[in-house]
Length: 300
Image 1 (tube, helix red, strand yellow):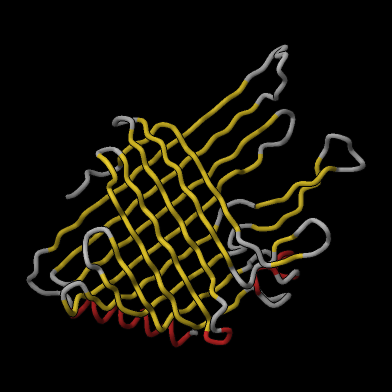
Image 2 (cartoon, one colour):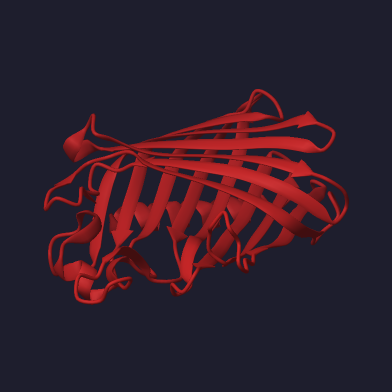
């Protein structure tokens, strides 16, 4: 695995040096920062219900640098949200940090060599909640995740196919998936596929990444990316991470987003609540409506 990382870094460095020529450099910057808030307050409400507050923030930045046949892309994607219902404590509802970079050098029309790195983690502790039999109305929190528990680093060395401005397919026969579990309790439990007591696991395999960015209408866009990884030591067991995002812009200040994420990881066992665990499809959807600020012009 160390050799794979060293190879990717060496290629990225060397191609950067050889790519320095008289070609014109163009830089495109995209970025947004959004906040959303919702509140329900009830007093003597005959229909019932509970007071609630929900807060959230999303941040996205993408910088694309093109020089001749060479392209660098850098991305940061962050989301954090929480809610308080009734007398319960504030609980997080969304927590995601993604850092991505892509180097591509075109060797033929629509085809390019590429090196892709994607890092994923979260910021806050994640818990499940169950009723506390010793405290009616209370809850027992069980930690199931934390910062860098898990953390994932994917390094892909392969070929891109880019037939138009909307679709990209990246196939990497040399791919590494690195799983980090820095939390001592989760490490001791062997969470997220690491051996009990270990905090790191490396897998070598092949990866396919498909991404689509489509402007559906003047104020509506759709993005989706699906990642498929299979390790050579367990070839055929495919880990899937599929994300979609609809963005609907109301005006220059307000917008709405609806995103989904589907995950299937052969190394992750989901507690079934009856003392057993099994491999399951994980699914999340998030609807945000709120204030949004553009951080950059569309192109510079």
